Picture (cartoon, rainbow, N blue to C red):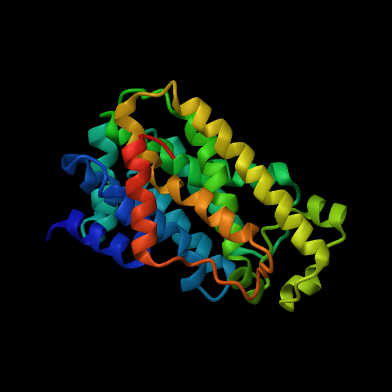
Length: 280
């Protein structure tokens, strides 16, 4: 069984944008990027597979045990776990980063509100930013590619954009990633969001979040200028952020009615254009 091929199949089927972006990496490194991103899929899909938080926490703990070596006897039958451990070992990836990512995703299992914008940025940093930085380390063979700042900002921009796109999905399951402090500032009510009602207050809040995403995007671009060029493919998925934000900027945008889902050919063109430019 080729565990890396199975990882590639998972990413191709369930995270098409990252799969397409990974194809811009050197061929010898793609299998390890697929393993990393297949692991991410395992974590982010936990909420979808459980009926209440406790089984989800148990599943996340199993992944912690995998990373610590305590579940090694079970790993052989789990291709993503086997591929991930090989990837970590070959590239000397920091296991603490994986632990932090898992810990951050415990939030997904509950319907607690995101307290502040700072908390949301921290969540994004431990999830999307960590994925970019780990991919950069893989591409650099475990050496420091000087991408930490760029990955931090780029990942926050990517996560904020993704969460805004997913607002209808999260609202249907009574989950709220919008920061409570911004909701209070703008007068946005949770009951309106859960009912799928678009209000002027919500549109103003989302406009503020888009500006925050753009600030992080600009800071990430500036920091990337000082990074090792070998790590650039790790940032490839971030090339989709600005085009998605522009779609949300259009007049008449309704977060519950306007689908931000461009066709695959357009996404591939955005990725190719970014690869030619050497940035995002």
